[in-house]
Length: 424
Image (cartoon, rainbow, N blue to C red; front, side, top):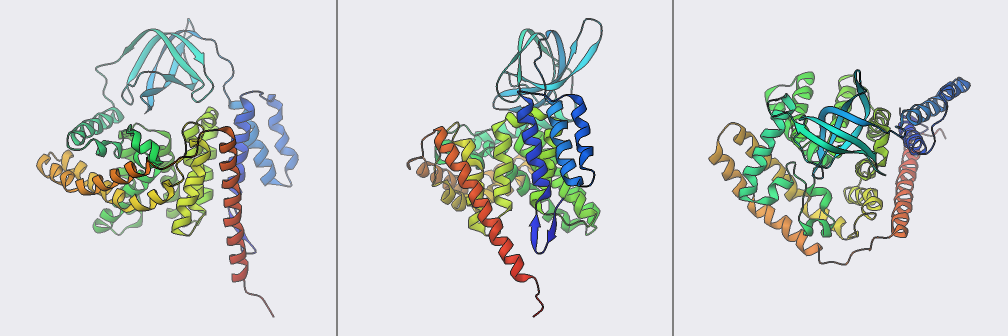
């Protein structure tokens, strides 16, 4: 998955991640015959190359083809994002109920894990999910209450509670930011639910758990509990779910005392997610969360991590919005206030869950100066000039990102080689 060779870090899993992406992209237009799965056997003397081909063909063959189904459907809400729901469905073929095998978009925002039944058809689109529901009749179960459903409802109640004190808070605790200043400032990635939120909550939980137990296994397992609840409560959106999976995998390696480069950890998660759901590569948020994370992890310098995160997301942001180049500075300025607010919101949520509403409100009001400062920075940056949206801008950002990553890795390579002892 990743090892040192003469002082040079080999990001093996990243190459497999790239093969998985390529296999899915090709799969949207052409699916190879099933016997192509035997091709990796030709590389039995070079197992890494053989595994790369195997991942490519598995993903390619797993990509959903053209589907024309007009019948009855039933399933559950798998995730909630952008005021819509992503469904995991089964369909009735006239005799039996069968699993559909791919995600379907519903242009209604339903609560997580809600049971949905509808009659109608599926229509194709050009992004993830590749199909959306066109119902002639739709109904949801009102007397069904699962574990995930209860958690999501509880977070919804807390978001309504904090929004009465300051609408800004709910955007940091599971609700998508809708303020135009946040979007124009280029700080949108901070205010929408992302991997940063999950990581901060993990660090907060870890610091609390350390006070209770020093046992490694219990410390790691208990520290994952609250981030897991947060991801469920925020609707299981892609960036947060990716961050949670990365924390879980890192914890498994930690328990096994196996050292692995974080970039390889991200790549393993990305490869697994593509194998499980190849259509996901046609989601912009998929690329933004993974390549921004890689841009951050590849850097050791605090300032460069912000540059790497910016360049990792900029190509995809530029496809839908103008890019604010000053957001790099803004991210550095607001990073500490945002962390303080996140920790405060976590404490407020725990007090709210314990029905200590006055104390919960007190914490929220105490956070007001930090919220005011962050909003002031966003409002100021929103007035700065932006780089217009254009395909050439997207290509330029992508090339800049590749060059940036190459330079950082080359510098690391030189540093590692200089550290290797030499016999004179």
